[in-house]
Structure formats: C-alpha cells, structure tokens
Image (cartoon, rainbow, N blue to C red; front, side, top):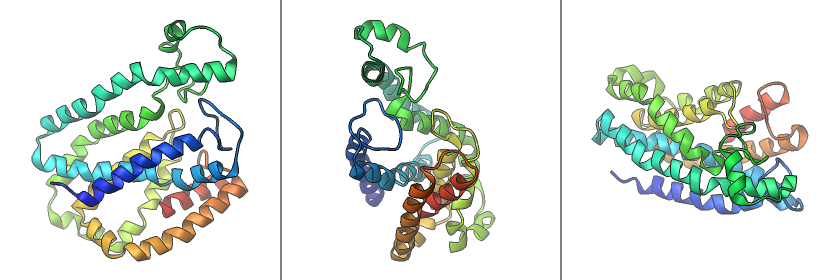
Length: 267
C-alpha cells in the first residue's frame, strides 16, 4: 500500500541531507570530520533544519512499519529489515565511512600515513563514536543502524499494539493525546546517548509513527495541518532564540531541558 504523501516527505528529507551535511563543514555548532571558516548562514541553517527532519524520518519509518506488518508475518518483517537495513549498513561501514575518519585524522591531527595503514587501527578504535577524531563510527549511517535496532527491538510491542482491540485506544484518539506527545519525547532525552545520538528518543518517534496509523492520527494531522504549521513556526523561532541564549541542547538539565522541550514541541 503506497502512501505517496509520505514517500514525498521522505524524499524531501533525503535531499535535504545534501545541503545540511555541506553546511556542517561551515557551521559554528560542533566539530565535524572536516571544517572550514564558520559562516552565519550555515550555522543557522543547521540549527533550523536539523531539529525536525531526522525526527520526521523516524516518525515516517514507524508509519511504514505498520503497513509492512499488515502484509507480512513477524519473521518476514525481520528478514526484510535484514535485507534492506543490515546488509547495506555493513557494506557502508566497510566501504564508505572509513574515508571520513581518515579525512578527520588528516585535517585535525596532521596524520601523514597512508589510507590502508590507517584502516588497521580504525576498526579497533572505539574511543570516540562521533568519528571526528578518526576512530570507528557509524557516521551518517547511524540512522540505518538505529532504525534496524529499533525495528527489531520494538517488534514484539508493535505486534501487541496491532492485535489490541479498538476499545483499548479510545482515550488516545483525541487531539490532546497528539499534542502532548512532545512530553515523552522530552523525557527520553534524560536517558544516555551513544555518540551524541539518543536511541530512546528515536525509538519513541518510531513508536509514535506506528501509533499515528493505529490511532488514526494522520487524518487528524492532515485536517489541522494549517493550525499545526501556524503553531510550529513561532515555537521554532523561540527554539532558535533559545539556542542563542543557551546553546544547542545537550543533556537534560537546566536550560537544556527547556530547549529540548521547545524543540520537540516545534518538531
């Protein structure tokens, strides 16, 4: 069952990755594999785009998991996840990602050795999973890695939710339930992150996407899309202003907790 609107949202997010990752070279927020002179446009482009398009990708993945499980058994679903996620991930970790670590080691630490000697140490260096110091990292493939883990780990819960009777969800079908979804999202940010990426946060987004179909939230979102957009724009502006005042949220204490809640409400 094709949902072309969701397909186009996913395509838009994927294409946004190209300018986003290019801007990461010039932003003023975090380290990167390679860096050049900081400019204001790149800094605020990264802040303005980065807080919503990856959450949207995990949300859409949860939506598509519902439709996948409508036509597949749990075993077939798992085989599909291995074929579409795990195998491409392993290929990318071996063939594509190490090049970025090599560039980081050359630019940031003055490494002068060859690429193949670098590889001998790369696959045993787990000291910094961000990869910005030249150690092993999933890099930009973290999305595929997390999506595979989440798809497998949540499968028993997804099957249970799919089997529940309609009456069990009656109280969750109101607009209020949709609007307060940012609360559990914000609470997950108090949990540990791996390499700066919070698995629990993205698992919650995936689960919300699955529930969005089960609870008929998608027609509600479509009917109220203009209202939701009108609410998201000022919330996004306040979030970006909070970045100026407190810096990009890291952790879940003090000002960062407030900024995280704003980000999730806007997204």
